[in-house]
Amino acid sequence: MAALLAGSGCVTFPRAPDEGGPPWIEVNTPHFALATDMDRESAEELARTLESWWAAMGIALPAVGGQAAAADGQSDPVLAIALRNGRERDAVHYRIGGIFDALPLLPPVVSIGELEDQHDRETLKHELAHAMLYKRLPRVPHWLTEGMAVYLQTAEVDRKNRVVQWGYWNAGAMRDLLEWGDTVTTHRLLDTTRWTVGNDIGAMELYAGLLVHMLINRRPQELDCYVLRLAKEIDPDAALACFSGRDKWDAELRDYAYSWSFARKTVAFDPPDSNARTAPLPNARVHATLALLDHIAMFTVLPQFRDERVARARTSLARALELDPHDDLALLLTLSQTKVDERRHAEITKSLVADHPGDWRTWVARAETPGLPAAEESQAIEQAWRLAPQQTEVIRLAGFQALRQKRWADARALGVKAWLGGADDRENRLSLFLASALLGACWEAQKWSRSPSDSEAFNKELAKAQKQLGLPPAPCPAAPSSASSPSARP
Image (tube, one colour):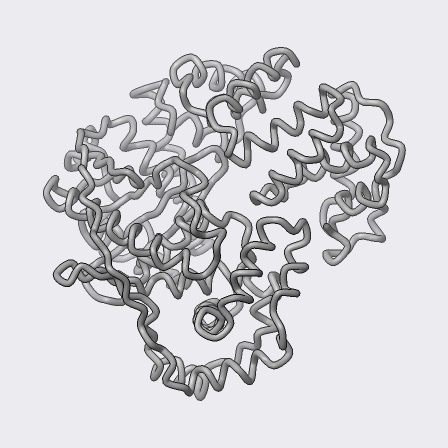
């Protein structure tokens, strides 16, 4: 996502009603929980628009892979935050049309920017596409998620003719980029390390979008194969075998850009008639929402202003908990984005499971409480599993539980399932290393232990986990750091 970074100007940070701000409301629809200080009529219309775009993109997405045709894999609604005017938006993320993020233990969140012109609407749809891809295809390489978002942002709903169209491409703008812009090779697009701040991400997104557009129209079966294999292959690079002639992609892309093959796809579409349930948003939840908004927009803030922004987020969070010590968003945000000691951590998770027993996130948080007795930890994992066995975080914990119960094969299967769902963190690799090693598959165990950046930390955590779980010594050692390389990973 492209970002224009700025410091200050004629901006006004949004405020809660108890600090002189306007009333806030929450509008709930099937896929969104919209928190806003807009007036009710405008907010409900926006919520219906979000649902229409979501449905339109859902029609476009199955056309690029059988796996994508499945229902949303994660049932939680997207938390959408919309501010009433440009001054408030600029105070949070200056001149950025939208932000999507998925922080640990928190619902996926999108911040909505301007909607006044076509470019701004496309930017928001781009971020909504990231939210949809996060739910349906959580484990996709950067080039595909960005390219697919560029493709899906073209979805347009024609209510009068009851159709949805997508795939339109401004061929002239793309050709101008090819002639006068930076050259982005497909090798660069497929290199994850190049998708970092400092590179020309805007140009890379456009090239990725062109690549996805070409694959959808010229190589749909290969793209279907690739998406399906991503859901099954431990090594995502193995799925690239679905594509033939990748060494000729650069030439093919130029040919495609200069062709007239940018035809729109049109499908009959009945816009969803979603009932919008609207209610006042309590002051505590408004402050928690503002703290979350600051956290997800932090990457847009220039370094010299970042301390001030962090302090503002902490103040909002403290105020939320002062008003309502049991607000689940404020408590989960405290756990995931601030440092708390073990005693405070235990107090928060105890409060969460007491006040919000039907939320799987509270049980995951409880299970991850430092120093929690093994029996209570097991109960928390089992409760999370009963509530949400499809959630990646829950699957990862279930694999950890299987290790404790010495069910090595189950632990490996659950760890792999979590890995395919996007859990590529050290904790899951630890579980997979131990399960593989205790099954006698040392060659596989060593692959899980290899990482170029955290081999020392991995070995420390490994010893700690073996002691904590009461496991026998692993019959094979972790790979030495000198053997670490990205290509060595599963």
